[in-house]
Length: 288
Image (cartoon, rainbow, N blue to C red):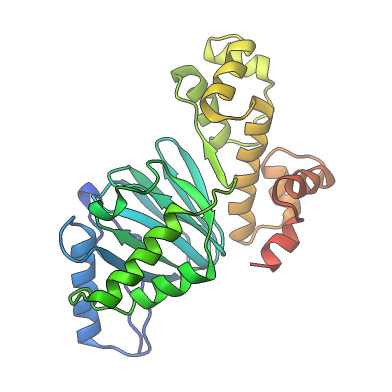
């Protein structure tokens, strides 16, 4: 007999209701410990580190929410996209995304997924980055959080404090990797960015999009460089790449994905994918 809890259902105000954890047998004690962990996630009180492991077989979307604890999303199978007010961040296997306390964020899981979420109390986040970012999850970090996932969320001792310090240091010293899509802050440039993320296959040129948003192409270019760190063309390619990762992770073919993100030439799509990730789409997912 197995029991499941849905980790990606979020209540009003961002309070998690349940968590996807699959166990080999029904166990009321485990159920009670899980419920206690979830109550800690929703509070800035209690033990400084709470970890919940997750597994599911179908896509799921979590509404934007915020909580007092900082959160680290990690994947071991499948793909998750974390969305904040400042951008989108992809969590493939081998990587993790850091979201600081009180930052609104939502999450989308694309197809079958296994992973974990680690929640750090506010005081543990003071020396950690103030903006979300994607980093490669070291073997040390993965082993540490999976050990912490076994904790009952009640007792705390010196050995757990040492492991907490390890998790905190891994986030603090993590090397940021280019799996994010920062959004511009200017209202008109943001309108263009949202149109592209909603429809990566949009074929309108920069001049056409600028005219639609009520600004010049030169101004669009300036805002994208200043506020995202990318010129418009590179930003658009990244938007297409992140959407492509989601589609392929959900089981869509490379050919249909290329068409859906705006490429009528599959070879050109694969070349873009290899340039931004270092490998072809099939190899990217085969190694994850």
